[in-house]
Length: 322
Length: 134
Image (cartoon, rainbow over all chains, first blue to last red; front, side, top):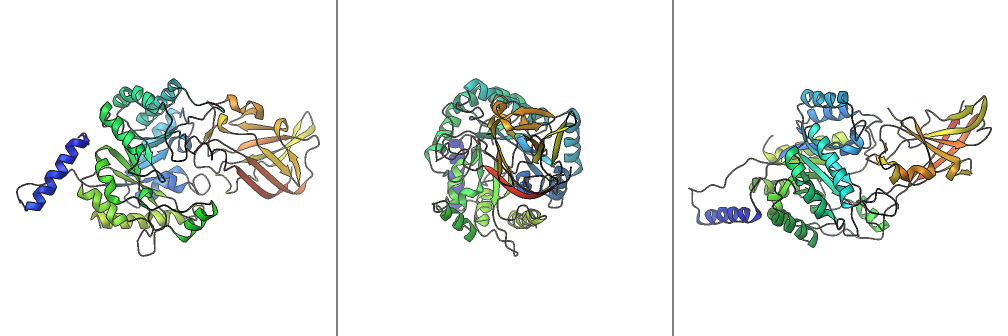
């Protein structure tokens, strides 16, 4: 998606106008629809205890889930310097299970040293080290998690500087850096305005964009979640309107298909998946939705896998794949 | 593969040097979803049957290298991976008696994506009934 926000608004306005007058001659450009994948984070209650990384990939194969997200600092043996043998085996496993490396989760750990924040140069160095490894493993999106400075998760003050410095490397390595927009951050907020202003002003598309976590749309928390929030002295805030994602879509290179509770009849009970996926299809967003299971019983063998399978049945239905 | 619990039974034993028991070791795995740099760790505390060990009484061994707790902060380039237990070695001449023990371990870690007011606020902590057999 290499069109600017302004162009995008023009295109959608034109499509809406043509729909309104019922013109049969003008069709919105169709670039496809969302694709399905899984973040290995979903298996974190079982990984290295009852499952290997290959077991997780084999499980994905059973869902026809092609896109994968791994967490660099967690799922790569020998990180940040894996052996050539490990990297070779990684590519062999992707081929064996028909998997596309999509998103490489990594962190710019601003508070890595006690009592001080990373300098801009240190942040750049750690960022570029990860972009290089992402490229070596075949990934094209990096979920670049930034350190934060307050309770609304405002990123560190120097983020613009080190991201700008890293753009030429990202371009050379074909990796799109995307901070994750995660609840309690809201899609309509100063933080998003700041990101969009930066993207437009610096013309970073597609080398710096966004990953939207569907948790921002969660509007029916489970009883367990409500009890947990109450225990922490807070209350659940209302989720964003699904339409709030639309103006951001030109900058969104991957989404976290966050989910908490799949029912036995294939409904995600907390988050409006039908509306989310219909909106993405309507606006021709064709990136990967990477499942992130965040519900209970993650350490019960087989439980996360069952939840993932149910979610992929739901997504297949909503995408017209089933 | 690792045991599900944070405190691992495999590797729980007394440690000898020069024919003398100088202490014991408690392997722990990280229950966090990502590996951490050693500089993100904060000193561990171990309790066995109520007896507390901390600070310089404990060392961390990760990937075969041993670190004093006071030195962890210097190693921002060494990663504690999820798939490998860290071995806490506790200095206690004579070690532990063979048999049953109640072992507790805790440590904190920094996560830069958490609000600073909440950082270090979710320490890792576990208690397990263990059998010392060697």
